[in-house]
Length: 253
View 1: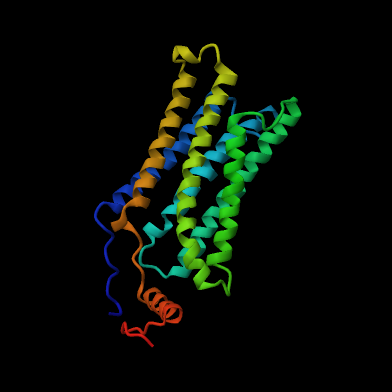
View 2: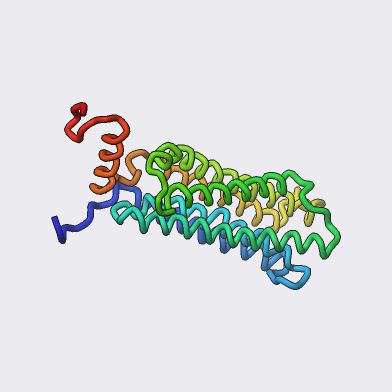
């Protein structure tokens, strides 16, 4: 009925989403504390330019990407089109921020004479970014562009969902590799003595894993998935009628 309050969220969903946001903000604060206290801070045209890279990757490829994935759980009863647009915008913003981080590390390496793309972290990180960009472009093409085929969109949707979660996990894995690499470069001799910087960076790694687990749990709970609205069910029924020759009442044409 018009004016009726929207259905309540499933029990526990709001609490898990709130925990994910608290963890995400803690991730950013911990990254800032590490870079500010032990690595000299962040600046672009200076020897500190490299520090832009981990900050942007945690912000873009982890926090914002995780929030983009949660859009369909948080906005459960809003119209599908605006929800899709918000989903795409958050992923797009994550890509832009990650690109800034990539440019920062390449420029920093060039100014210091350090070779590029030789480590496992750089291989995994670059592959994840390129696949993430491809995933975003395909998602916009299949689900947002006017005239996109409903048939193709429906068939691509399972792959889009799978690779969305997989790329989120790969992003966290690449960050963990980067943290370890950065620690071994900077405090190799003292890392094994539980120095404060090593403990703080390890804590950041644990927080990344926990954030990923919480987001992954929310995404994989079947009873927390976004229920289809009436107009979406009608569209699905019309498509089934056209492709399978079934009438809305279930009889054959």
